[in-house]
Image 1 (cartoon, one colour):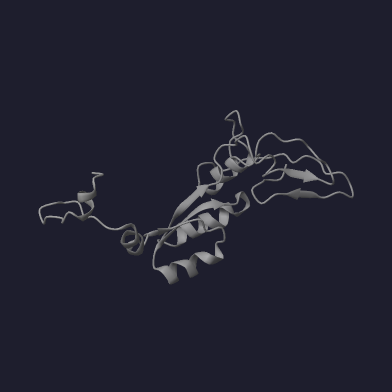
Image 2 (cartoon, helix red, strand yellow; image 1 turned 90 degrees about the vertical axis):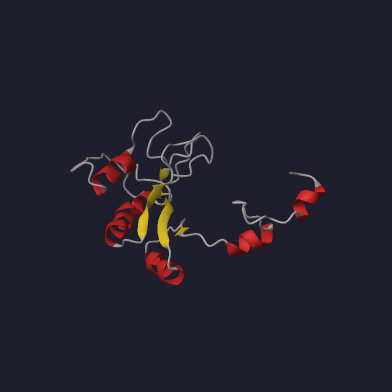
Length: 159
């Protein structure tokens, strides 16, 4: 209803639709689930302050075990969504692991549990073990030359 009269029309009691102004609607919103927490130490504080259910929405692969412990221990932690499930083109090298001063050319973000072709990568196998879907997985790590160090981005995994 886009005519001018529909904006001022009273709502009859038999109607099931309740009209709010945008300001009223936003003021009344209080989400029951709070997300995008990237630090397990903040979970208890966020739950206590908000008395809400908590869900992780962009956790780092290296923190998987910590997040899962919180899910199993605290009934108010709903779960953890993986960032990112599948690699994507863009944000090139976001999750890359680099040795020394190497400067590889990346076309994808390199941070997915699945690579750009849909094959599982090490973080996905690691999650399988943490989540109890597999008892054991083995990984290989490329050798790091003497005197050099590996630098792993927050969204990444050692190479």
